[in-house]
Image 1 (tube, helix red, strand yellow):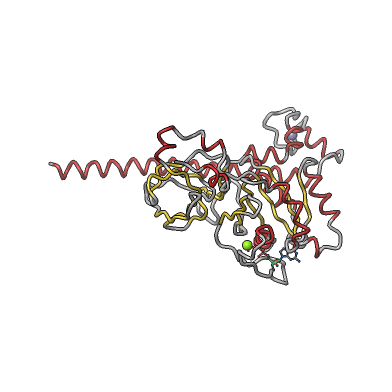
Image 2 (cartoon, helix red, strand yellow):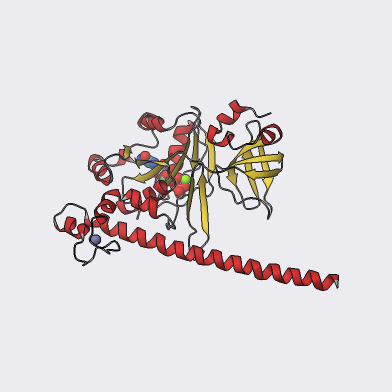
Length: 346
Ligand SMILES: Nc1nc2c(ncn2[C@@H]2O[C@H](COP(=O)(O)OP(=O)(O)OP(=O)(O)O)[C@@H](O)[C@H]2O)c(=O)[nH]1
Ligand SMILES: [Mg+2]
Ligand SMILES: [Zn+2]
């Protein structure tokens, strides 16, 4: 029988329990993916941690996923996700990479030093909006900044409804306000550049030094990619926190909705352009250019909006091309196998 109390501590919600048939509820054990490795996944079923070997037939999983187990080492099926963060894998690989699943809140951590970058914040915001996860901008290292107020203002200008918090990740008192988003059973993911303080904040919120942290490079304030795994930790107050490795390159793929939501003001303007496919460069009747000329929108924002829209469309096209290529390869492979089998049986 399913012990709902211990599962709730892992983030079990009605969204998941309603997916189980009566038979499944009686015979299978829900478990949450806590950490993913190359060959196995570590899951928690509310009673114990289990290592499940990953087979070819295993579903493609992300940290945060809920699975149903038919035995301690066997996944019966993956439950539908409430939310999913993906990105285009770094480098030349074109496969989508699953970053985190079933997340409720995303802390976008950005330090108040040379790392502060509005374009990058908008990139992460697009990802969070696409995943339909509530974003909170956490401006870290406020203790090292003479005056965080102008930075907070700049971020707030991106969206007046956006939650923006300036904190010292090393200080419990300073991060206390973040507990507003860390309700029991809520899953919070931490994202942001290497060295921005995600693991430091994780340790402070966990009230325990669990994650390794490392000083940033002095010359360019860049981090050293200290965290190498995504891991889900239970917080003392009952929320779950997912620390992630700082990404070298966050490429967006297939997230037009997320980008449009992040730039809702500019998107609204572009709907007033004379041409529906207006590129906002020199087309007649362009509402975006008109607003730019009258100083009503920030040119940086318009440029980044167009850049991110283009980038995600390009990566989307590459992903689809790859998928159909894989499918036809699959067909060729199956046909070859079929022929080999026929030959054998003759
Ligand atoms: N003064 C101060 N130092 C901080 C703060 N947050 C993080 N640091 C320091 O910044 C350095 C990098 O912090 P980490 O927590 O390792 O950064 P990270 O985001 O986890 O980095 P990766 O794991 O590489 O992605 C450490 O030396 C921390 O002590 C802060 O708010 N104030
Ligand atoms: Mg870290
Ligand atoms: Zn236009």
